[in-house]
Image (cartoon, rainbow, N blue to C red; front, side, top):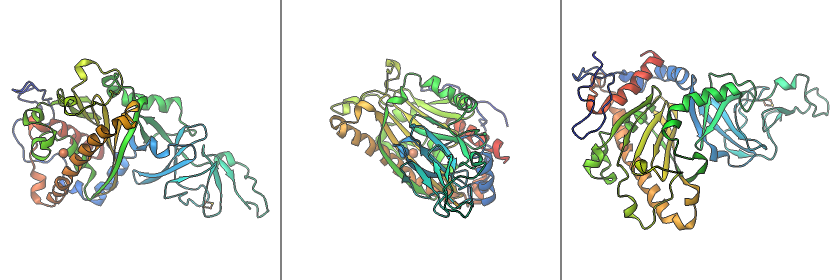
Length: 398
Ligand code: FES
Ligand SMILES: [Fe+2]
């Protein structure tokens, strides 16, 4: 297969990146159809993708206050996101150090400690072991010798832009992370931080969050997010066809792929009485642009001047994905004054996501066809999707 693109710039002046697709359609899917429903393929992806690098795990607002404990599943492993008394967010394996019982399978708020329900060992919010009642069959709460090795096992975790990321492949020496973990995460994010250096993500505030539990393989969710071709057909409310066609491919790194509508938000402010305040000091060249990126594998980000949308998801099964979609606005846009505008915004964004649901289900059912191994991505639209599929293939070995 040749690696070139016939038209790096389209007639509309938009960027088409060279990628894995040649101008001749090949009739060979880059990922085999079985990878969209097979248990063995799913298990491999859980290890080689979701347990082998930085992965979206949840939202910081799920643990808004000290003592909040939120269980999640990443790479098939149960984890706990905990906010400590020191306001730090830490992540641990959700497995008691005695017999391995999950500490909780529901979000909870505790006062100072989290206690296992089986034999009542308890742990401080920093994961350290606090008490092991009757450990010696005596009436004592004393912790055993070596208790410093019996804390909840920490997982490398980081917080950025309202999101919690974990990396199950990094050794987390102590809860709270190390300089090396910080550096590794910063290196992963560097390409998108550079592109979005005009945004102050400390200012973002949740407008609304919704959960979508869908009977679809996770890769279809990402591929649909990176598919700009379907916009005029499925989401006509986002603007005229000319606006839908005005999109550039953008590859920030192997693991940060997406696109940009340079004028996607043009004229939007005029539609409402009061525009939302911007997320920072947005330069004039960027006030109308929309950036859409997948931070591989499971953080799907959408940024405009005045809002930030995240779809983070759990690849919960070969044919099941649980999306957690959150819309953030500037902290000054949270009050009553902007409530109408906020609602209008979130309604439209959730409606767009709903419109994709029947598409996703039919993409999934189409994978049962023998023709699903003979699909044809096209150079003018699908190079970014092809790059995503190549990355998956390289990591899993398809
Ligand atoms: S399994 Fe948790 S205290 Fe025994
Ligand atoms: Fe869509």
